[in-house]
Image 1 (tube, each protein chain N blue to C red):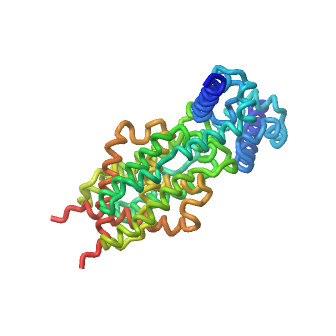
Image 2 (tube, rainbow over the protein chains, first blue to last red):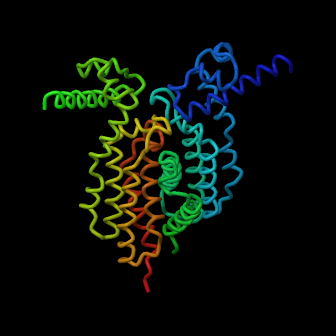
Amino acid sequence: MGRTGGMMKTRDKILDCAQRLFSEEGFDKVSTKRIAKEAECNEVTIFRLFGTKNRVLEEIINKFVEESKIIRSLHESLTGELEQDIAKSILLYQNFLHQHEIIFRLQLKLSDSENQKFLRTIDFKNYLVDHFIGVFHEHKIHYSPETFVNDMLSSVMGSFLLKILTQGKFTGERDGHFLSEKIKFYQNSINQYKKTE
Amino acid sequence: MGRTGGMMKTRDKILDCAQRLFSEEGFDKVSTKRIAKEAECNEVTIFRLFGTKNRVLEEIINKFVEESKIIRSLHESLTGELEQDIAKSILLYQNFLHQHEIIFRLQLKLSDSENQKFLRTIDFKNYLVDHFIGVFHEHKIHYSPETFVNDMLSSVMGSFLLKILTQGKFTGERDGHFLSEKIKFYQNSINQYKKTE
């Protein structure tokens, strides 16, 4: 350990502080000086470890992408049972957004050209479309899996963003209630498209 | 008029120039010096009238909120016919977001503490909940109007934000198609909750 251990700790501390500051105040408003102060290190240490403030941001996002196990969770949870899989898709996506709220807040504040945003959401969507193609076929659901998945994820994402952007004013304190109603709504709605003959 | 009139004109000119520059080049890339040059005034005038560049942005957003006629459009469009009103609610909200995309992009980038965000969306939601309480009652729909409106608006907002944040990668070029499918989906779904006896 010794020196290397110490350096790792500083590195992580810088990343943690930078992530929190960027997401609260925006990437541009937070200086390396400020990050250094929060991480209780010298500003020069940030430059030595990362080079630039942009590289600090890249590390934060890379770390998040690597650590995200969202597709594996989907793979392990979905069974092919229509209503259960709808519930699980909504809950997993909601949990994923909730757990990484800081990263999403941060991404919202990046310049439009700066970064490929919400790549995990696109992966998540593609995985679910492939999955529901099979499930809809099996359950004789005559509805476009792509349209269904798009709408379901948009709705979860929209609720999540409206909640954080309005600081809870959109649905008040009843998010849990609305989430379980959302699940029922999608389950009931898709059953309408079942061919019964 | 005299002095006051002159000050008002400068103020509006600064706001107009800033809005155009922010939307073309992004908030962070445009300096107060640049705004001053475009508005043909001294940079000091901007600081005297607004204090900071952030306050200029806030004024732009406040102005937009005051001038937004979204509730009046709703009031003029909704008739009490269930399926038509669902279609109109979705289309009006979608058009509202689309028309003011620049303002929304700007709002996403503001510090979390800085601004009350998406206030029009909350007004829009409250208006629709009140409206659909009556419409659901009239059409014997046994479903919570609040849950329905929350979900419908979240879905439209989510699609809109996913589109702009992924630069079109979420649904590709088929937004129009997904929007009309979304309308049909909500219309069909709510009809399930009709009490027929």
